[in-house]
Length: 314
Image (cartoon, rainbow, N blue to C red):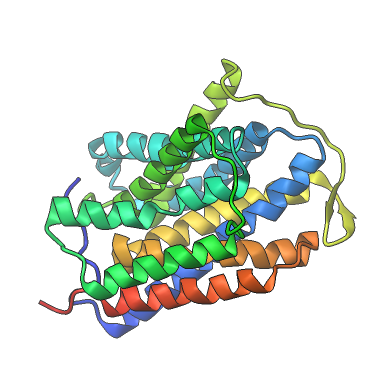
């Protein structure tokens, strides 16, 4: 990868503000995926069918906008074919496949907690690869956000952990870290819309192939789903997954990362857990406990500390 953007260096305040807004919007969109996916799973869909449908719909939505964003610079696709393939295979398909395999061996909350340690991997990468040593405030923000995640996911009572599940969850964590790092790379010249469209198309094709060969079970039906206590058609959930929680989420996420840098954006992305809890409360009736609300506050506090610990203009 070439020229990674430094985290909040000479960026103007307006760029930082828009980046934070886009990052929060992306996290909220990603957070909606849980309730929408659960409505399909409860209706008899397999996780593989739901996630593949989600990614392929998103790719279809972004295909034309992504092509137009190139403005005739088709050489960029050929020049960055390896990057696009890696992004689709690791940051999209690999990350989601690993996560769904992880939840087959351990509680979902534990798998999410392990996956959401990806900002630590991003900090390690920036330190080792780009000599950007984390400040004390960044380290403090990391610890604070980690404690917040434990509380939000309500894991203080402890949970059984399977070693195989841990390995899969670590794979999901690595995929998430690759998403943050590769999305920050502006040196390849690919517009955010184009990278999102191409990456989702590759990731969807990989998942579809995995389903055809039997690696990922594919089960789907046309039964109605239940959301917010109301019966709704199945296509509403799958369209929401594709358009909102994938197409919109990836485009906003990539644009945000290029404004904020991979390190800060990955920590703002932790607010996805809070968004997921909120949507689960509104759409599934899963009321968060007080300890989870406190955890959400700690996550936001950790993000603020990481922001304060970012390197200044050089």
